[in-house]
Length: 302
Ligand code: 13P
Image (cartoon, rainbow, N blue to C red; front, side, top):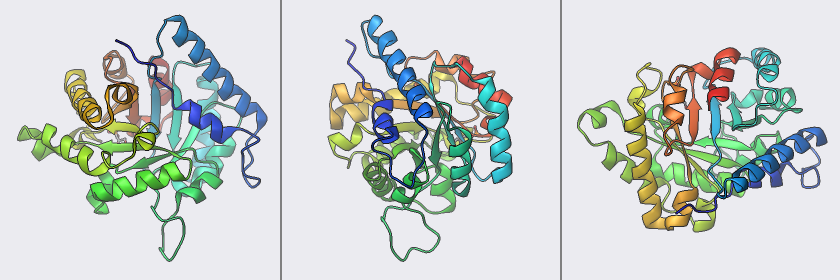
């Protein structure tokens, strides 16, 4: 049985509405109309198939790459390549200080911009940190939470992920909560245990209302930046496990609506096989999102 699934764009639309925009945040009406048109098209197409499918999302995590100028150049080249493409949502996560440049460069497109991290407090004496509200104020609408590189190099825990996810939702950002096992766990056949633990510590503490506002990314650490992508079968099994944990905690309908992206060495030549699997709702792309041509190929194949 298929469940009605409310695409994330519903809430993104709320944030993009010119009437609700904060005075200091300039979002052109044209951009709003384009996003709205793509959303309406999606609703119509989905309904005509007498079901509302999970909307695909292709996201590019740029990590600590590209200056402001390189960010602008990327969009000059990328925007024309994906003009008229409406098969999926496109989100780019540049370096935080380049978010305003990216927002400006995508103003007349349906591309959405996100941050790679946020802090859970709204403001305060937290040197070097940025709050969700501050990111939202410069035009970000998404944020990554609990990426394995944050866990590895900055000691972030599942509890941090939970607090940051709650803060993101509070600020009107759509969090992509990242989970995934390390190579040693993978080799020891403990991937499932890790995912269950990360779900319990980082996601299960959300309310049902909060859970409806997140996207999850399964990113096996052994596949990140290694060129060794998980097979569609491995990814699909992991996604099913996450969905079954979601079902136990939040119920079947909520679990069916949850979008789960795959990340780890996604490239133009493996996206088709991955996205064909009904459990894989999109991709979180690292290295291959830095090049406009290769990222456009991935977007078009999704
Ligand atoms: P790569 O695509 O470079 O393996 O990176 C994946 C990733 O970490 C996305 O968040």
